[in-house]
Image (tube, rainbow over all chains, first blue to last red; front, side, top):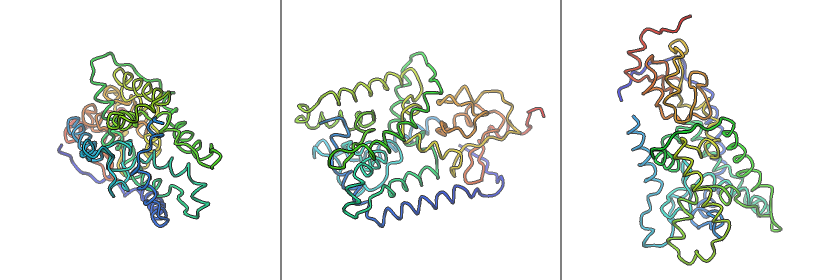
Length: 53
Length: 300
């Protein structure tokens, strides 16, 4: 797809601030060791979650 | 553009379901990639899944939050919320249109040549109820004697989980068949219901029940990547209404939370260059629409 690029004003700042907020959440989660817990859950089959058992 | 979008949907589906050794291992993927968030709805109990589902993960963390706090581990769901928040702020519901396996499944079913029916707009609010109640409040507040909740959305509703994990696991592990009951039947009925509905209406699950779509939709107004309407160029001809799979009147609601950014209105409908792709303040126009729309015709 060929596209014509045009600049239409300044860079929007609101999404960048919200991105920073979620990045902070993500980092806090990272420091508390949450990825390990998520991995532990994701590695096992949750039978209850898929309607079995 | 639609062909490209379909290819991208297929590639995404294969990437996040890239563990094809499961028929031999008879088990799900258990490697380190499962620490990565799947942008779309993709059950992590699917034998081929290589990433975690944010809807499933957040419920699991919330239902065990008391247990976690008692053990001073503080698993509050911030890692998962941060991951989906980053995705939502960056691209909003682009994920739904371009990277969701269950969205692709519904689109393929919609190709069955049957009469098309619209979905009442009021039904679109149900997905916010699912997000708030079934994904957040019920797993968090309704607990058993041990202080543990249930993954309400996954357990009682999610048809993606039934399609991607419930059915394959029963085929893969014959021993599980003896444990099937009303819960499984309920989920099969929901899956069949949405599958049949998808044949006669465009993306019914995304529009009425998907909590992840509801969450991403909240960011459509502010996301870094979004569609933008140039009011000076728009003639209110209504051409964008005819191609939209989500039945949005784009000229009336350019920041609708329902928009999945499939770009059909921009590439296939608008002849006046009124719709552009806005990336952090920079607008990108399709070459054809820009040429046709060189002289805005909207009366002032």
